[in-house]
Image (cartoon, rainbow, N blue to C red; front, side, top):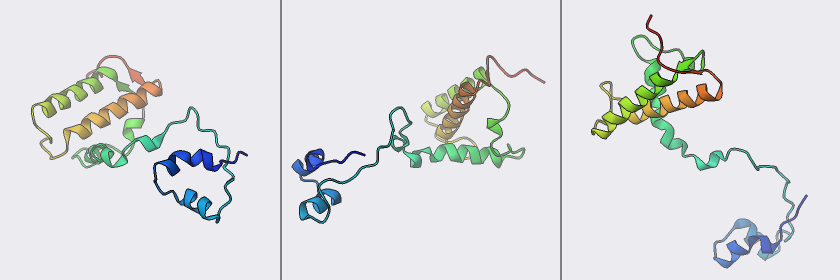
Amino acid sequence: MSYPTEKDYADEINIGVPSPLVEAMKSGLVSKEVPVANKQTEGKVRWSLASFKDLEPLIQALEAGMSKPNPYEKDSWKKGTMYKEELCNSIIRHTLLLLDGEEQDKDGFPHIGAIMANAMFYSHHKNNGTLLEGLKPKS
C-alpha cells in the first residue's frame, strides 16, 4: 500500500483550490500520510469521460422502437445478427435529415437518437462478431 504525502497534493495546494483532504492534512486532523488502496485502472474504460445526460436521445430512440404499432421487444437489437449496410444507410439517412435542418422525425423523436442507436447497434454487433456484410435479404 502506498501513502501519498503533502507533496502529492502540491498542485491543489499551490493553485489555492481547497481540497477537503488537503485542508484536513493542514489542520492536523488527518495524518499527512493517508493510505491509498492500490487499484489497477490502467487499460480500463474511463466511463467518467462520458456525458450520460447527453445519451438521452439514444434512450428515447430505443423507447420509441418499443412503442411502435409493431413494437420491438426490449433488447431485441442485441439478439441475432444485423447488417452493416442497413445500419450505415440508416445512420446516413438520419444524418442527412439532420443536416437539412430536420431535428425530429415524423413521430417527434430526435434524429440524433436514431443515429446514436444505429451506431451502438453497429458497435455491439461488430464487437460480438454478429455484424454481417451487405443488406438484409428481402423475405
